[in-house]
Image 1 (cartoon, rainbow, N blue to C red):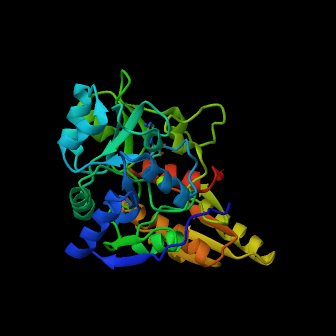
Image 2: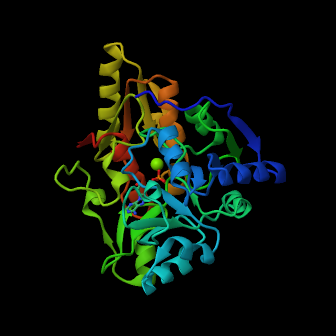
Image 3: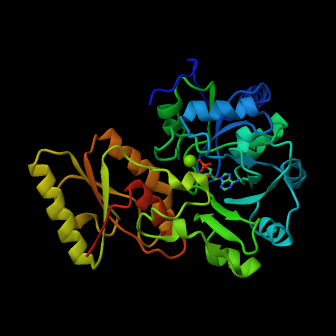
Length: 353
Ligand code: AMP
Ligand code: MG
């Protein structure tokens, strides 16, 4: 789909007092600024200005029913956007904010439909990244920001990724270097009887349960197969996402069987003339013989896999890979969030041995 956005010159700048001041002015004027957070780069606009929020959808090519997350810098700003905040919600905010946790709450009247996709609830997060906090403070606004990628592509974990997708569409990218976590925030809905995870992330189910007791997971995101009859409660989770242009295929099973299967599938496709890639980990790289081989990180450190995942998925496009075969990961803790993103990137294409 071609997106019609007035062509602007996109400036990528280091973060200093002058660039923050300029960024604050752009936000107040209803424009867009890309900025680093601890999870991924965000594409920010004034959350209380419906026309500004609409520009985010236009720049990303994002479906209009997919609401934005509102970023705040302090608890006073929470009261601008949310009402009737239940005690357990306060407890998890206290425990995990500022940090990679988004909380769904009942929205205040004043929050425009453009920000919430017409929902009566609002997603709120207090990021810990100093630049994100500084930008919110400098602008004097609450900032609606989804990930700063073209809709459907892997989220940006470096300013260069944002430039790839947003060049000519937005005036300013604040370059804070590579982000720390690398996958999007955990989303937890606090408007029901029992807290419910709508998107897994760095803050895991057991971390939340330590604070508020039982937490459920939306069945639409806990599954390993496409569940056509279950509609995801976070509208964004129903879309194909994070995907490289080629077909990603995950393979799981006993270690040796996985290696043999990936090697033979890769050889077969290469013989047919395709560009083939293999995604593995530091520990397994030596086992693969053919194709364009990439390590996502170390199995001993799931956080390294989260941090590299989107960069490696973008590399698949740079290398123009037609087929990418990948090892899979344990689904405990952070592994759960990693596999959720990989299954979506693969369109749930999973071979179990
Ligand atoms: P992104 O910031 O690009 O990761 O996208 C924001 C995510 O938050 C999407 O998956 C949205 O569907 C989800 N989200 C935002 N607001 C709400 C809400 N009020 N209820 C449920 N999910 C939401
Ligand atoms: Mg996104």
